[in-house]
Image (tube, rainbow over all chains, first blue to last red; front, top):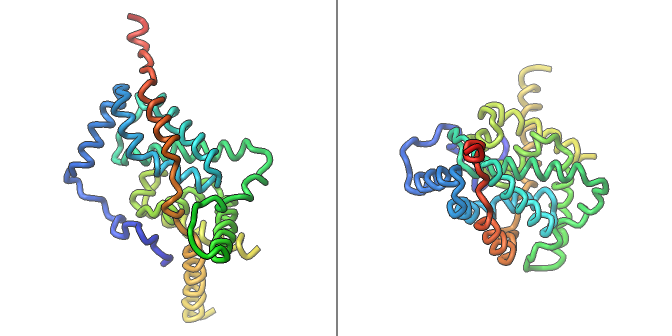
Length: 199
Length: 59
């Protein structure tokens, strides 16, 4: 077994309780209002999920300004599409992350010069020993570059599992696959990462 | 390859994958959008027009 992300829900292979929780109920009502094109409800969903969406994009692009632009595009696109949104058991953030991921991958594909991506992770406002920060940044950079070389689906699973620290069930909902399929994709992705990193 | 060798190989492979997985870390907590961006974007979202549906347009 590979490492479970520290914050990921290990028990999440089993379906979550169907008992409505107040926050979930509240979010469901917000989504209903947003689907009916209620801007205030949509803005509240934005408040709840903007940081998560931004961080997902940031991992992929490694640049704060680009991440903000793509975050803005994600929510504008979500607003355009929200009228067609159908709740299928996955939380709305899963839908937002899917839009964010697709937009970002498409943006990165359209960028001819990927050399700009070399500067990642040096603008985290980290405190601490500069040498440690540099060493950590270099490690993270090489890992991130390896992650970027994975196929779309494998990259998404790796990001959701280890960067977003989601459980298998949640990842399955985001990418629209079964939990066993997510496990297989993760296993293959880690194998490919190993090969890439070994050069 | 006998069964022990297969098991050993599999364990070795799993260990290697665990090591790879341990290198993938979440972003630091301070990676967040700027307050200014979040504020501007929220205002922008509140000003978005709800597009009239086809039915409404026809009416």
